[in-house]
Length: 458
Image 1 (cartoon, rainbow, N blue to C red):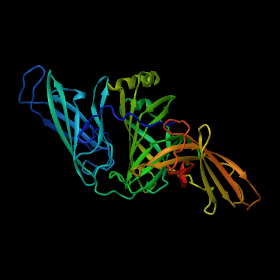
Image 2 (image 1 turned 180 degrees about the vertical axis):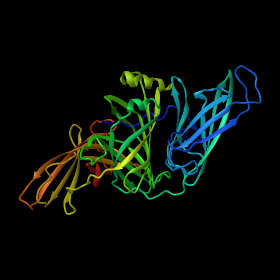
Image 3 (image 1 turned 45 degrees about the vertical axis):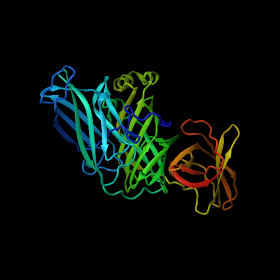
């Protein structure tokens, strides 16, 4: 079952340009591509000589959604690069590939590797939202070798973003994520096909006065595992969060985190696990794109088994990274959020730094209903969140609670249901200790739908 860890390795090829700009990463999945054929002048070679005829460059540039003239503001991209002179194909030096974007934006890139050689593609992942109604130019520089000659080449492509930002997502959204395709590396799809679990994701949105111009608000994503996309009585909350920080702008969202997926008894640690998509009116997600990076140490690679291990080993670069690009769909989670808590019920939350040094959050619900809750399809969870200097939500702690009835009476008389949540830090799993004078917000999940938020400062 998936478990979360904080992302700590964001790309296999990174370097800065100017004011902290990461080198770019192009991922994508759209049906529309632009093929640019350019003849470059021979600028020299390692074997000497030169000439007026240069190689033909085939560059396919694809956005993740929309068309090349109307790209969504949360898009990721990829480009395929190949060179040739006549029928002689060229080889491209992956270390020579450099990408720049104008107007400037922050991004990361991953160069695809297969068998220690350039696999023909570069993934480009913007780290923030693209500006609305803006034409961007992507410039790619690289060196190719054909018949012993080295040709330095430069290619340019362009796209324009959409002009509208849509309607912001409503608080309390909840849906299933179902990974439907793994495109890069392609052979990995044969191993993962049918083996990736559905992940039930609960969305908690908070629109605040963001200081960061890249976002209208932030979200918390909280996940579990589900056996199907049917009515989610079979959700098994796994106690992991993904990601710790998510931004949304209008109907678009971008996230960044990490996760360990259990696939066919294999533990696959994805240190980078980025999701991007568009909320639709039905409460689901369109244009879902997954970008993940596995930083594969020798031990991790050997633990992937005789089937997946050799495949992963053939795709890792010199930094022991393998990038995975895929797609997902999002289906609405129809499980009621708070069917057992009525509008007239009295709720109270307390936060305690316990001995050990385990901290707990306790929810008490006092009601006059005729009978207490006796069964629940899924156990309840709590997320303890805090807001940073940019008003972005992050998860300080989470916990799984169990029901206990501290008071009962005849039908119609008050009784109290108490749920105690031992709190842990989600990226380490160690007991959590609250900080004095730090404001927290408790978000409760029943059936992985958010309910009952309580703000307090210990």
